[in-house]
Every structure is written in C-alpha cells, then in structure tokens.
Amino acid sequence: MNLRQASHYLGVSPDTLYRYICTGLVPAFKLGSRWKFRKSVLDRWMEEKMRQSQGRRH
Image (tube, rainbow, N blue to C red; front, side, top):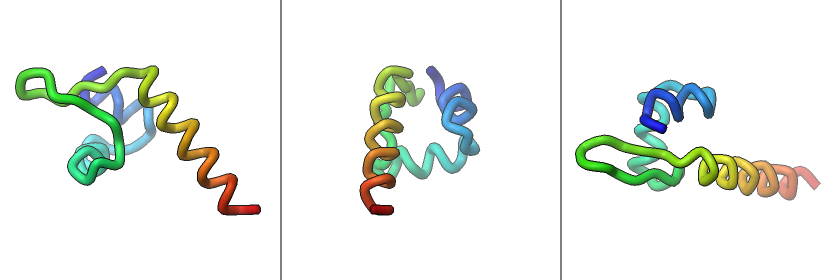
C-alpha cells in the first residue's frame, strides 16, 4: 500500500500517518522515495495496539 491507501485503511489523514511514520509509531518502509506499507503488518500492528489498550482498561 502507498501512504494514501494506508491512511485511508487506518482511518487517519495522510499527514497524521506521515507523523506516525517519522516517530516510529507505525511500521513502514521506503521503496525508492515513497513510503510503503504491508497490509498484513498493519493488521498485526493494529491487533497489538488493541491488546495494549484493552490491557490498560482492566
């Protein structure tokens, strides 16, 4: 996925996703000059974030 597709998939703006990339919050890699995302990696990342957030509520 490219940045725009990943931001749509995650439900955040491209600018927000870019900030997340720069701070290391979201897993991404550069292919040439463009940021790329694997859907499977984003899915695992979201699952982990959900588990962390549920653990804090208990």
